[in-house]
Every structure is written in C-alpha cells, then in structure tokens.
Image 1 (cartoon, helix red, strand yellow):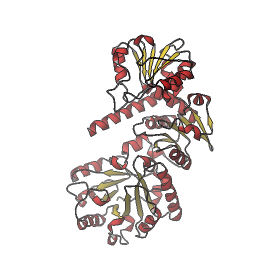
Image 2 (spheres, one colour):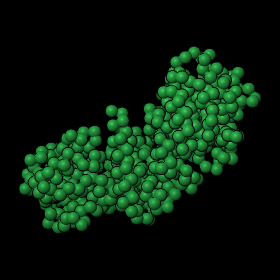
Image 3 (cartoon, rainbow, N blue to C red):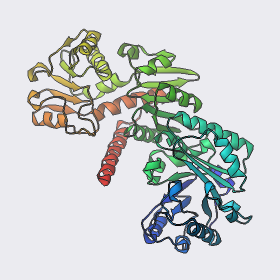
Image 4 (spheres, rainbow, N blue to C red):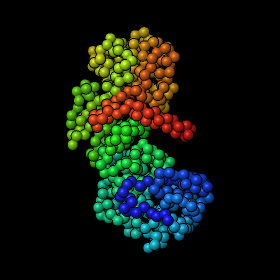
Length: 503
C-alpha cells in the first residue's frame, strides 16, 4: 500500500516531488508512470482538458499529490470553484496521498480530522517576498493542515536569506509540521536544489520554467540532489546573467569525479552587495566571479593575489574561515591550450578588445615572451591595456600579416548574436586565431579563420583551463580536463536543444 512521506523518511534524505502537466489524462498518466526518480508526483489536473480524479489515482506506483490550481493563483483551471472543490474532495475520498488546497480558497470544510495529514495548504506570491510572511504562515498553520507550502518570487539572492531565516524560526518552533519553502525565479535556485537547508519536506521539479522549476534530470544528475547533506560545501558562480553558464555543470561533474562533497550553483546577483550577503549567510566556501562583478568584488575581499592585483580583476574567490581571498585564473587558463601548440617567445600577439579579459590575456602573453599589440575602437582603453605590458596600440582592425596569434577578447559572436564576427574575414590569413567566446563553440570568427587556413582555438579550452585552476585552488585536487570539457559540451547541447524546442 502506498503511503505519504513520513517525518523519518523526510529527514533521511532530500525528497523529490515531480510536477506532471499534460494536455490530456491519457498523457498525464503516461508521464506519471514514466517519472523515474520521484518520491512524490504532483498531478496538475488544472492543465488537462478532461480532468478525471479516479483515472489519476488508478494503478499509481508512487505517492501522488492532486493539484487543481485556479487561474487566480497562477494555475490553468478556469471552471467554477464548486467544480474545482468537487475534484479535490473526490481526490481526498479516493485516497490521494496528498491534496493541495490554496489557503485563499476557503475550502476549510475539506480539512476534517481524517484529512488534515494529507492536505498541503499552499500560498503563492508572484511579486516578491511579502513582509508579513510569518503572519501568513501562522494563519495557514491554524487551519490544522499538516504541510504548508509557501512559494514566493525571489527578486534577488538576498530573498533566499529571508526565506532561510523564516524556515529556521518555524522549524525551531514546530518540527512536527511539514513546511515547503520555494523561491520562484532564477534567484531562488538554492531553495529547489537544496531544500533541506530550508527544512523543506520536499522540493518540486518539472518543466514549469516560468516559475524557475528545474528538471528532475538536472536536479539529480547535474546538481547531485540525492547526495547533498549537512556536510556539503557550497560554491557558485556570481554574475549577471549566469543562466546560460556551463560552470555549474563543469564543477559539479568534477566534484563527483573527485569524490568531493560539494555543490556549485548559479548565483545571479543583482549587485555585489547582494552576492556578499548571500555568501556569508549560506557559508559559501568559494566562487567564480564573472561579468559584471570582476572589478567591483576586488574591494570586498581581504587579500588579493599579485596577479589579480596586476590585472585589476578577480574571477575566483576562496573563503578561509572569515577571510575572503581573491585570485584570477583567467591568465593561466588562457595559456593552457597554447602550451603545446605555439611557442610564445617572440610571437606577435594581436588582441581584439580592451576590456577586463584583454588585460588578463595581455599579461599572460607578455609574461611568456610574446610581443603584444592591442586593437580596439576605444583607443584610450587600448592604451591602458598596452601600457600594462609595455605593448603597442595597433590599428583597428589589425592587418592580416601583422600577427602570429590573434585573440578575440570581445563578446562579439557570443550567443545569441552568433552571426557576428569582430573582424572581417578578409583580415584573416595564416597564424593562430583564439576566440575566448565559448557559446557557440564554433563562432563565425573561428569558422572563417579555418577557411582562411588559420589554426583555431575555441573559448571552451580557456574556460576549462581556468575552471581547473579554480577547482584545484579550492579543493587541492586537480580535476580531469576531460570530465569538465564533457560536462560543458553536454550542457551547451542542452541549451541548443531547449532553444530549438521553443522555436
């Protein structure tokens, strides 16, 4: 006989509730029976055209939750409240392990003594974290429902700190009652990936990307949901945006390969203060830092490496106790794919762009004997980069015969502007072209360079190189390049597949 998730079971490991949506009951049942790694399955009857409670419950192999969300609470059920209430009452009478009731619905008569332990009392706020969240939870608790679900829109990482504080207060006050706290949106990813940090009875996974749901496959495979526990160390990538970063996939794969109990998350901070507040509240052990915070974070660390100081930017942070240490692994990562392909001593290296990436590349090349010229539309910035390494400011665009190594340090050609190139094809002839853009892997610049007879190096090589440097600095373990590269390639393929599906 199927049973609901008990308290001891919840405490033993993180629980996964997979949300199933489908246009028909036949498809809903098919997906229900195909949901592999699920402890609980939420069946959304509001989405199907032919809702049938008995069909939803019949022959089920796992515990299910019946939800029929009205349009006024973000769902799709447009029928009458009387009809919706009838479906929910039928679900309780039919023995559903859980039935979701909206706190604002006023269906209190369904909460009799026999049903209370099977009711999930839910409330959603699609605007933000309400100031009276504690009061709302108290009101929901008074209904007698055993499990309370609160889903709120997180608009910054700091909102997760608020949810953590709320969760801790309620857990300390009443450990018998189930609580599920969800931060909707990209800023709330930690609430979905690591529900036990918020004392949540379970997390929701599925394909409702609009509210920030993560697929079951990504939760279990990429974020290693089943392995997370009290001793897991937290890392992440801070930037804006980071939704299409492959760093979480790379580092989580490396943690698994190295047997390190750690989790790496995307951290889309709205500013540096937002990131710092989150990091200190959750005990972050280390982080990658990307655009636009590489410079601003310099003022927030306790110690900066000599290289990072010279570059003027930090891309990696390590936390030792209360001290934050900053370094820059871009330079070493950039050099890795060049070490066995091109001797740098005396090489004429032409850099396209004069931003933070160009600064690190210029220092890496000059330190290894290359002659650096900087080519940018903004001559003043080009002079600043060239002066770092006693280099030259060259013409824009650089002439084809003026370089042995051409490095694109601009974002031109990056997804979604894949039809763009920083340089006319007529200026490509011989030599080696290195594009720091990694999404897509084969940029227009690299394709045209290859047709012109140039050797080419893609940005994924540098990405893997700098990630390995950071990983080793954090853990003392040198991760296999193949593991990180494979994870990155697979993640990029997922992005393409997802966009093609949307199109």
